[in-house]
Image 1 (cartoon, rainbow, N blue to C red):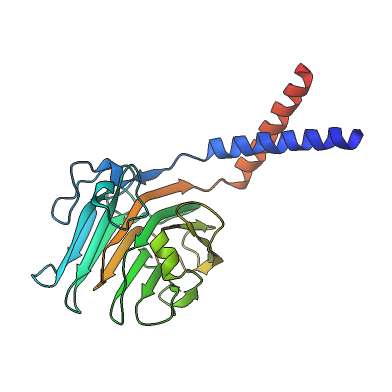
Image 2 (cartoon, rainbow, N blue to C red; image 1 turned 180 degrees about the horizontal axis):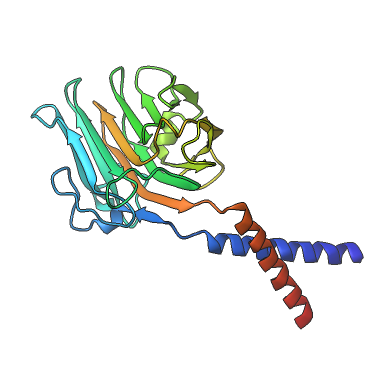
Length: 273
């Protein structure tokens, strides 16, 4: 009987702590989604909506051909877009000759200055509707420190490059990208350090266990995490992305305070009984 009582108390405490944690850190410090752009979004008319981000910077070689550009994808278009939020997603294409490309970037603060991630998580949703053979590729970059990519004509997996180093395999294949993924990069530790810590988690956009989790260090004194970039190079079809977000990582002291708050709540519940 005593063991059941202890188990019940423990479960209640865990539940209280879980509720406190999820409620306290759900809000993003920067956020934008394609659903904000009901009036359209393109490489020539891209309003700066959402909050906490700088203006869009879009560079392409839309010379006729090759064809490269951006668009706002809607659910009514019936495209193979799996990262729709509120019925839309941002779309990009670079179709045609071998030198077709488009680079889409955005700084991590509204005034456009360098504001690297520090004890924060940046996340973005992405999916591809086609990457063909050699010379076709996509890249998702965070500043100069991280580059996540997929190249056609080679091994069927994404790759990760840190601090401009070698592109190492990541266990996410094309089919998983096409189904939609959410990429979350967490940076922790002292800023401007040669060994600042990071964690990269890639999960299905629809939910479920992570497809890839990797941790390590990078040199934040030489490489920045101050912006997001999507690079599309001569891909066979459209690429889609959505839900740019930056959220704070709870500090250890905050977690201790959450523990005290949860314990106090539990004791109050017991007194009422």
